[in-house]
Length: 148
Image (cartoon, rainbow, N blue to C red; front, side, top):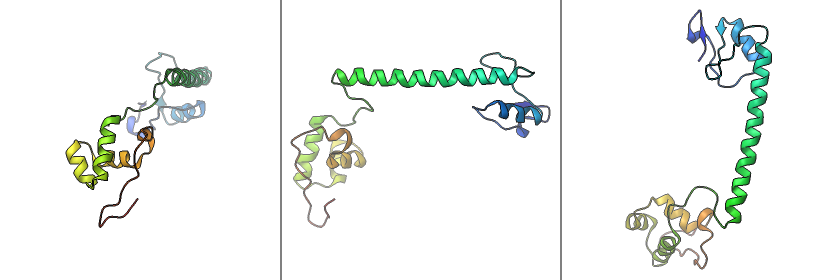
């Protein structure tokens, strides 16, 4: 949040800006303050301080990416799966596919197994996290419905 002698509404609010942005804010009558770091951003050295802070943020972003990549490799090397956990375990996914083969609709399956229809559709599509389950038969077509 930026404060101004003319009120906060007259100044642009932003979470990231460069020295040009700070000059524009000061020209509009705003005082730029680093609340978290306590740096004085009002003066001759303001552009240098902002440039150093931007560089440090860029370096931290690169380091974060490297840490995430290393963690992903470690998890996958241990046989784990990276990403959001599945809502439906493999055994339940198999039961959903078997019930679909018996002719139940997606809506009936969702109600019976207490999962959203979109999750049932994802299981039946055998894409994404549900593609790893092997031995699943292709989706049968029910009378009056079309194959997808």
